[in-house]
Amino acid sequence: MPTSLEGQVVIITGASSGIGRAAAVAFAREGAKVVLSARQADEGENVAREIRASGGVALFVRTDVSRREEVKALIERTVSTYGRLDCAVNNAAALWNEQRRTAEFSEEDFDREVNGNLKSVWLCLRGELEQMRSQERPGGAIVNVSSVSGLGAAPGAAFYSMAKAGILVLTKTAAMEYAAEGIRVNALVAGAFDTSMLNKSWEQAAGGDVERRKAMEQQFLSVLPLRRIGRPEEAAEAAVWLCSEASSYMTGNSMIVDGGWTAWFR
Image (tube, rainbow, N blue to C red; front, side, top):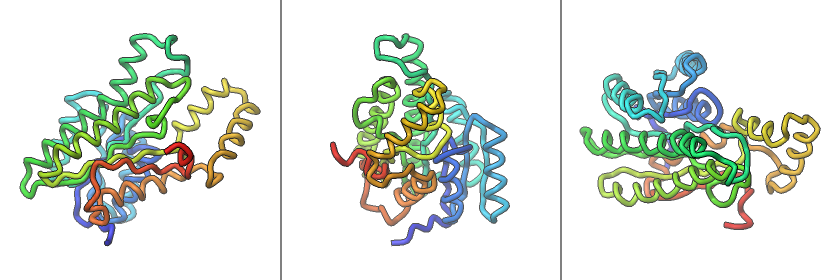
């Protein structure tokens, strides 16, 4: 079945860079009307301009998705501009804390991580579900972007791992609750992709030591079956497929896109 999303309206969060940026470009290529959101206004506007220059339809709305009122404004702006909401890719995420052992984190660290990487997804999901079920011709498809860190332990990043695991449970529960109303909800479980977030993670782990970082990268590549870091565009294509009619019988799924990294234990 085709992956064309001609005329569909999609919200993509964290769309100023990385997987979010690649997803915005991919959805526009498939004919979707793309509403990009991110905290970085200049970068987000640049992506929207690039899409429009290529003949696509794109609107940027600056949004901090950890804030309820800003998420509400994002969805309202989308509907007032394009009339409805058909798809959403809840991709926004960040490394909110430095790496450390579990007992070394503070309560503030916990709140920061939950607000930035889990509550934010729930706020978006809640607003999207409400819009999709209440609009004329109800229904839609939602993709929540998680991480392989949510599949098991992530030493040094307990709260990040916790948040990403929470996204998987949130996705499965919503999928079961809203399937009868024509809304599909799936998770994209991302492995290592060439993004600023991955680079920041390695910088932290290496403590700024260039040679140590190179050694870490080589060691990591040696355990990846495909022996390379993923391109953001490869994750974006999975998100497009999950929102298209090609995946019409799929909901509540956690699609792992990681170059085979976690195949040995799943």
